[in-house]
Image 1 (tube, rainbow, N blue to C red):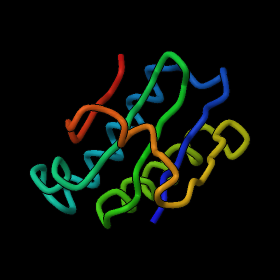
Image 2 (cartoon, one colour):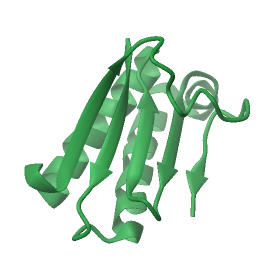
Image 3 (tube, one colour):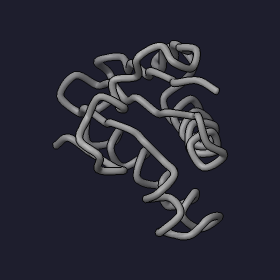
Image 4 (tube, helix red, strand yellow):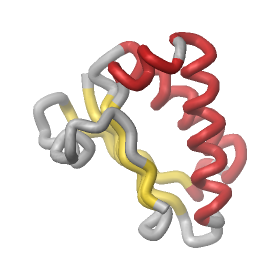
Length: 106
């Protein structure tokens, strides 16, 4: 699987970006449960820099990436959301963090 790096245009308010991500996270938790999402997802949301990394190495992570992509592109438009895909083993920034499963920078 792979890691996705999302970059957002300056026109996307940072708080809205966080709200959209949290809605996607809620959707994934509805599918898999809170505990499984904590155990099987890795991500990092940086509101200040308007970036988000999602590790899609697990089914949970892949579904989070798919749902977030759908919500964000629908909400802000294709041109406001840039998505880069990095192959597995490429050094995801979210894996370099502490062992915490989830992190949202405020």
